[in-house]
Image 1 (tube, rainbow, N blue to C red):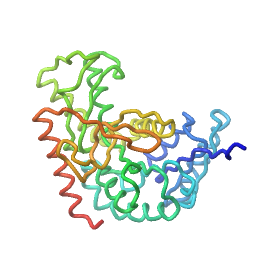
Image 2: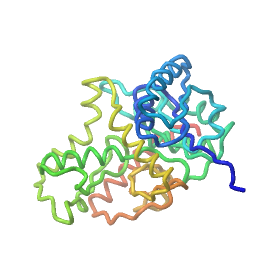
Image 3: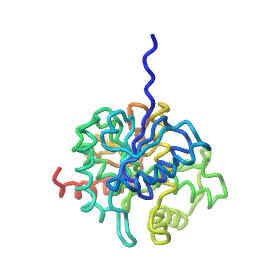
Length: 308
């Protein structure tokens, strides 16, 4: 007799701009059979779920509801987007004091019901909160993933492609390190079909500054980022649920990676049903190595101030 079918379930915690846009993206692409929305404001989650459910005749295939933490019990992936959002003029690190206490409560509620899911963290500062999640949850490190520099790398590729008038999907380039001000571009490995990009130093600096400051520009203009991060989270989710083994620059706990240990940073990782299966070594040049270490030191300094 065939074993009973278990539907894939994704839980999104937090129904702000990022959470709702992520849920809607997952729904439109029918990534799972069950989608649960959880928020401290349950009425907000109910309203978002009802609004999306009214579109089911156009989409179908997904059971969606506003739930409670008990619904985490059968979840395969739990995406955490809840927390204070970044305000104009704030850095992601400025959010840490606000969000660490929120996270302690959220992760404890999740682990009351689930010890097998993959925890996908999107709340900023994402690298530090992913590290905190690992410590609070006691999960295997492979199953705690931060969104990392997946979005930063996409912005980087978009801007290179715009400059070159080439589809960004054909650009090979990545941002590593903190999802924040100390992130760094790996110019030494960036290319188009193996060919050099041909940028001078001023062009490189302009592209990187635009990449690094993209979120600030969007927040100043419309109050929050939502669409591109939702697509980045969708990309991570499908790599997990479909066991793709895609290489994505998620944030993971590093162990002697280019000399860096015991901190979450964005780096190229093989992502599959187990979570982060492997972290790929990058042959960084001396300047990149120094910047990567500086990024790690910055976050470890902030982590040392926390009570975890």
